[in-house]
Length: 221
Image 1 (cartoon, rainbow, N blue to C red):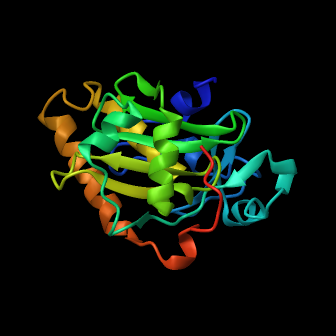
Image 2 (image 1 turned 90 degrees about the vertical axis):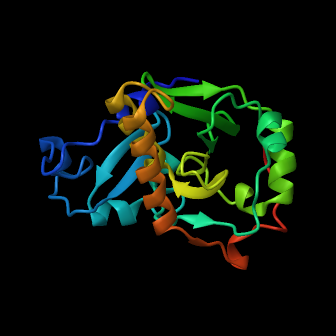
């Protein structure tokens, strides 16, 4: 699988008060953007595009543009009953403490990445272990293809935390780690940035409700 889209579009966050010129207009129609604004994923390239409200809403419709583009949802969820143990993590085969998982419709499977100074690195995922976890914890199976992810971390100092997030949250995380340049355990600056990032994710998260637990849905690896 090509990682060029994910690596290239996980841009470092701009300095406070700065706004890059190419972020001021919709990348689909050229209209001025509000702040905040939505994002659309190009499914073929994994590229993330800034979108005005009109373009964003256009691609919330299933099958728009032949399914080649999809609007990134805005929900951030957590499941109060979901606890991943150290054994669960070991069975997934992830070699670091922070990673994200999303279902790549092109590849037809869930893929795992972890961010670092070089960008996003794919980790070989044990799909059998993932499927067993998703059967026990339905929120893991609730991610929308290509546009949502399960984000797992121990960075906040509160044990292993698990969130369902928009995929652009993961792109933002990758960009921040590239900007720091020393990786997750490469200094106090990186650790503090991670803690602040995940504190913000936790602040935005709401508990998953029963309608968002696909208990009757077949779990796909």
